[in-house]
Amino acid sequence: MTRLGTFLISVVVITTYMTLMPSVASAQSGFAGIVKDPTGAILPGVTVEASSPALIEGRRSAVTDERGQYKILDLRPGTYTVTFTLPGFNTLKRDAIELPANFTAALNVELDVGGLEQTVTVTGETPLVDTQSAVTQQVLPLQLINTVPMGGRNIQSIGAVLTGITQSLPDVGGAQGMQQTYMAVHGNDPRNNSIQVDGMSLNGIEGDGAIQQYYNPMMFSEMSYQTGAVSAETSAGGVRVNMIPRDGGNSFKGDLFFSTT
Image 1 (cartoon, one colour):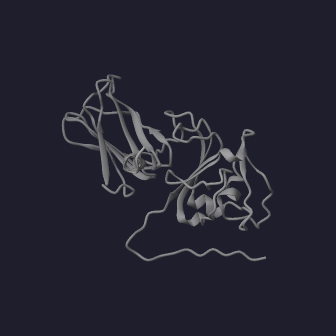
Image 2 (cartoon, one colour; image 1 turned 60 degrees about the vertical axis):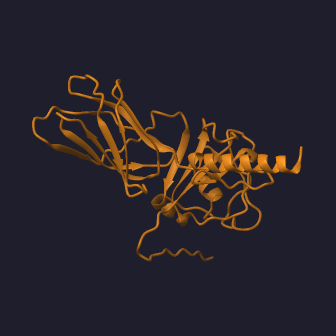
Image 3 (cartoon, one colour; image 1 turned 60 degrees about the horizontal axis):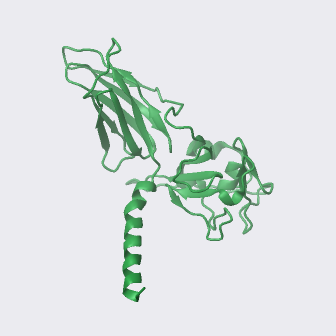
């Protein structure tokens, strides 16, 4: 193969990778469900809108199909308001829904017939079970990470307090050195672990399941540990850690953490 041919193939491969990367490097959360009327009849044509400060565009929408089903996918973790609208029916608004990473929240609702324009708001009901996926995962929000006692402040020491995860070495508070511990689940080889930030892989080139960085957990809004039925986008079957960065703002603020002996 000529040098020009090799160059052109490289350009095509890199361009294809850069095109597909945004579609896989995401938290991949969403909403899905069925909309019915009080008699149990399905309602096609309902406009379903999910809005949140976590979205750059502010809101995303979908329309129920002939079976009354809808899906709004590829949403960032955050607090959402979901609104259901159909002419001739009262508008239903589900407010303050916490959507974690890698989670599809099932929202099945009923719309009441309304002669006048009226909005019904339901607050504080967040789905706890992902009925759309068989993935076994534990999601830790920042508030929980800051309160759980642990030896060190890294992904390995946090994983040590979760169900089913074991470490290759005990963490006695000095896990910030060059020698990292390794997480394992279900007897799996630690080399099969996948470490990600917002869906982008950070695994080292040695292929031993470790990373060469120590991240401060306070940089992330939440951390997701998947230990079973991991999706096919991850090429290994070990622990999958996905860290979701915190969003910025227009005000200057910070946090301080220190430890002593």
